[in-house]
Length: 383
Length: 205
Image (cartoon, rainbow over all chains, first blue to last red; front, top):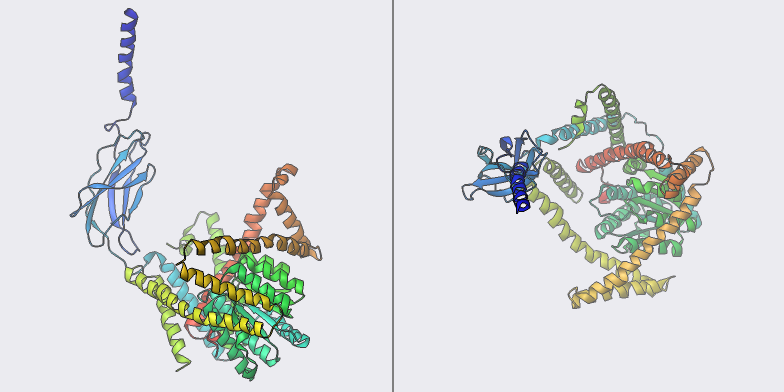
């Protein structure tokens, strides 16, 4: 009996201790200084909340965010983890409706604090300008100004130096070789649709290439993966042949739609290479995993290969398997380089100035960062 | 007018899309959706008619003239028609899905898997130490290849760290250099098209 009473006393002695140790709603404090603002630089339908953290975070797991409006009573609208001081509410927010928020802390055991003060009413509305990307706009305008400036200089007849690009210089030799051998030239314009700048660059190069082909009275084969690209390629090749004074040699069936599947396209082009044995293969445009499948097959057939892409991961494959490689921006410059149109060439000068500006910024930014001055980073960060 | 109209459209749409990027308003988004999604789908659908015409003309000519490999042309045409009909008749049901999952997908996978052998043959040629640059490439590639597999760590504990350094410092620096050039080149090309200086993509000057 005595033992039982001692046991009961022991249990009762434990109870207050347990209650004190457990977090309850009284020991939790809510975040303070809750502010709600319309999320800036967005399409509306979003409100951003900010708050100060409670002093004691030891027993807090996160925060419950409550919202109310004229149409809806106070209800749970979101949750933020313990160390967060910001939350963006995008859950069924309507533009031009007043919302108010309250926030409370939540412990791992499920206890909650009292509510914070009610935030002042806030209204979400769509913006007409992304103020946070004004730096991008300024840079685009400066760059546009540079391009226009160099075009005007070119119009005055000032000669602009252009470094030699071996891959493009080799085009004439490659077309000539195909003519001598009596074999066609294969032009692969990549596997991406017409809305990709790399594909547009490929079409820009196709024009002078097809003109050369017509002048040499050779034949060009252009298998296409995209219907729109096929139509543009047909018009481009036709125009090239017409400009060379040989519209009669243009064969529409040589610029054709092969397939729209990536690896089926690779298989089809490889088949053309093996059967037709073109003397020259030109891979210019946007390429992905099929790049090496194409370039290696072309290499095995003994063709002269010139490749160019703006997809950096594919460049090593082309370098390994092709005779000449046009790298990155050279693909965009190719049209100007081949046409020698002063207005087009002048834009390359603007590109060089742009690169120079970035190089100077990188150098200055690195020096300033060493001394703890990081403001230059904000000039180049978007959003 | 035949030349000017496409230029006017390219200028108008190009400039509008440039401005659209800086406007987050829903009306701006709606404009983008109409131009990029709806118009593009309509144009693409019509262009597919031309594409199919081109496809059949090309292969019919090959079969008629019995050119080398004309049997593949016949197979290609039959396959297209079979897929088309099975999709139309079964409303893209289980049979159509089976054709895709058990014929097209494995064929594409097979083609992709060939890449491993092609990489080996290309690497063999690229890694021949013909000059200083090629030797440098050979040494770096060997270090990276060994460092990426467990034996690298077994041979020398510092190997993974060395590989990480090669990938994140010199390799990344070179890639970023090219990417900066690509970015500037892309903007310049876009500007030339919007301003009507670059017209080769339209077929003529």
